[in-house]
Amino acid sequence: MKPALLLLGSCLLSATMLAAQPTKRPATAAKPALAKFDPRPRPRNLSDEQLLDQIQRQTFKYFWDFGHPVSGMARERSNRSYDYGDEVVTTGGTGFGIMAIIVAAERKWITREQAAARISKIVNFLWKADMYHGAFPHWLNGETGHTIRFSPKDDGADIVETSFLYEGLLCARQYFTKDTPDEQNVRNKILWMWEGVEWNWFTQGGQNVLYWHWSPNNGWSMNHQIHGWNECLITYVLAASSPRYAIDKAVYDQGWATGPEYKNGKTYYNTTLPLGPNLGGPLFFTHYSFMGLDPHGLKDQNADYWQQNQAHTRINYAYCVANPKLQKGYGPNCWGLTASDSWQGYAAHSPTEDLGVISPTAALAAYPYAPGESLLAMKHFYNDLGDKIWGEYGFVDGFSEQHDWYAKSYLAIDQGPIVVMIENQRSGLLWKLFMGSPEVQKGLKKLGFQSPHLK
Image (cartoon, rainbow, N blue to C red; front, side):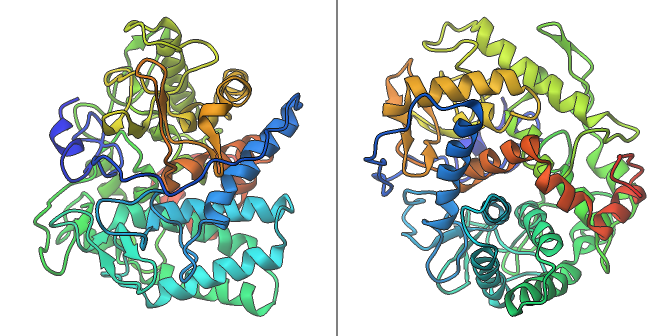
């Protein structure tokens, strides 16, 4: 993959630069882990439903027990990011965490009142935090609300992370409908902030493409266009859905649905892949946008997104089963390549960047697309490898039997999809909430999408 220089530099800038732009995450070796492994014995002989409950609930604790004490926001990771200390919170990971909190309320692991109070705390913090033309930076200081730069010039707006945040916030606005002070505050502040995101500003003067970053110090100097296929479909959908600052359809057609690695059409392991790079790229392409966007029956002129995501998942699974590099441990019950920590730093694992690292979030968050294969992986990870990879906040970020390496870290951007995508397969909860948003419905129609959710 050609963006190794970015991956091993300050950040993963985009998936078009990395075959199809994987999300930005630190590539540095982390400091000693702060998180602890759960000393209690793991309950054994669980039914499938009990196992799903156990995994979701333990993973949810990352956002609940480990949320920042001042802001309530999700910490970027359980160990320190670079030398910034313990205050780094993540906007995108917080969006995923908000969705996990909604799951917890619905499943009664916490009360609805507790969930509303925590999310009210988060939106109160965001209301006063640094924003740029309505968009948030990738990282904030969880105590002060000030920007923590992600890289030397990434010290302003990040509309991809902002879109992941609003994926969660719009679900919360749909869910918290009661007339209690906290629920009213959640609805009102989310609406006011949502109306203020100047999505069309990020066309850099009216071009038919969205740009990922803008900084008050560096302007457009990062100059990174968001092209597909990658994790950023949600960014274009939300930009088209904006009540006040929406993009036109031409921005989607000419900006997003373009590039040499947008259309694919090749067959890998007897599965045809409609969109994306060779062999599909990291599996999070099928997760981040689709925690809110329901891929069932979701189609436009470019693709059927259920077929796309299922094909990508099947190819990722088949590659691990075929195991052409003979990595130790790979097989039908141990699969899943996506961006995560690895034995040599952060990496965007995929069939074309196979370092022998399995990222539990990959197979677990694939539960809607391959429930049988996903469940096999869950059982193996929990029952057979649990002594090494199960801890305080669920499964660790990655492991490599080939290199006898087992992470001690957890990342918000990886823990969130586990809770949410398992729940979407079990109940469709977040899909129903997000797809029920009137603005999202309007935006999808504007871009030419079809969906059973559209009225």
